[in-house]
Length: 605
Image 1 (cartoon, rainbow, N blue to C red):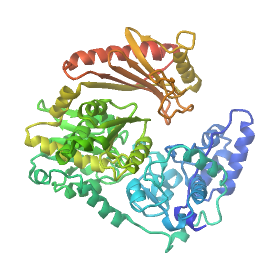
Image 2: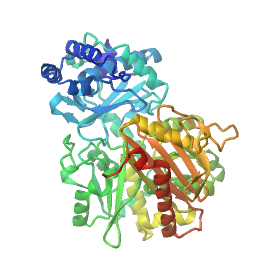
Image 3: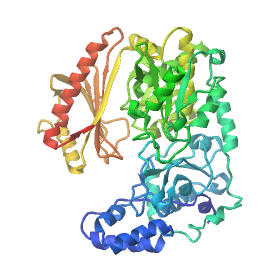
Image 4: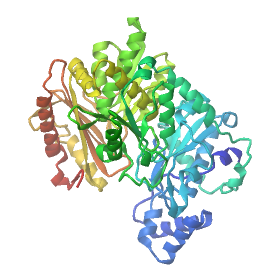
């Protein structure tokens, strides 16, 4: 089928069962693999495991099919149904194509865009380029909405370790898919596992009239749209602030260079060792700028050499942004995701306010952040008179909610999540590290004309709107039953099906449980935000302004926690607030996590 030929390739579905019948199911899965896999490297590796009788490795490859969720797929590259490879990608795309055919009668006319990053895995012959099976490099959420396509697929594992890859899906609205699309696509994949006749034939792409590369026109249009968010072009031209940029061996270099030109900046100095895409990520342990100083070592050295004051760092697929600033002490401050969210939210509102003197326009102005992100936007919105909304964790929720609001005639100015993700321009309904980088550069350059640093402005924001001090970490637990027991005990804290009323000396004023749908702040005790029984998430609000969320990770064996102390304006003793937050963190760990009881492993051990 022609549509499948263009998008051709991919895999996933429901997890496998328990131990019962494991051997026969393993035999069935491996036999099927031997019939269907045409990649000589992954086929040979499976044959070798069978010949060696290596049941342990075979179970790792075949015990459970990758689950297709709201983030699509993400797993290590390699052989078998548990991994990203040619066959599982063929299977995934076949199911996705069938689902798209049911949803869109004009699918062939409108089409789908596919892009990829630079990841590769020599042992399995896998790479993002091979898995994408075409030559697109583009901004998927922007392209989908800009060209009015039916969907978009991005082959990337973002900032995951180098052996991983992923299959990220966007819907026609330009936002990542949410339920029920994920479940229905997963079902369609299960129904289309056998490769179609031309699935392995790459030659059908050669000269295909269905295959177009829009990257040149998309590039041009994206930067034209980005120019509309440049508010101080004259300042940018004259600024003495110097910037260093790293793409951490990813795809961001040329795009950030172009963004700086679009804003009339001198392009930033690029870290030469990390400028070009490299699937080995040779200079970093993890290609994730959220890790902070460890990933920025080369950036610090270049910035010190060139006398640059600001470092901008993208992750490998350039949708996240980390920022560091040289302090007067000579130290580098790496801003947290929440701190940069406060700065960008303040800046975009301040810039908007300068252009919009009509106070009534505030009625249609919105900012969004996720439930585990800082509540600083809520504080700014309360004082300034615009709307703030919380969504579930992840930009799939913020992107879809932003689109709903825009369709209602609202102006969504900004959205962010604490994991260094920022939507500064609503023509991209997802986090975008390229636009965030250049807008941060304009903010820093403007502040410099007032003899202010980013750090000084952040303090001014907290003084005006109230200090918001955050702390996030996690415990590692590989046993799902233990995790479930921990959360169930929180729901039955007193043995009478009640949530805790206190945590140590801290009084709890409000509980929201987005696993069960309970929210004691609502008249009917039912949560407004969507709930999910498949993941654990409870938020406790405290009488002292503290907020603590405990949640499981969808992709890692972690129980994460996010704490924030939200002080009202005028409480300007950050050291005292930090001390109180640390006491709250200790109380949460001791009374709610109980790491010794549940045998939890702390972060970094």
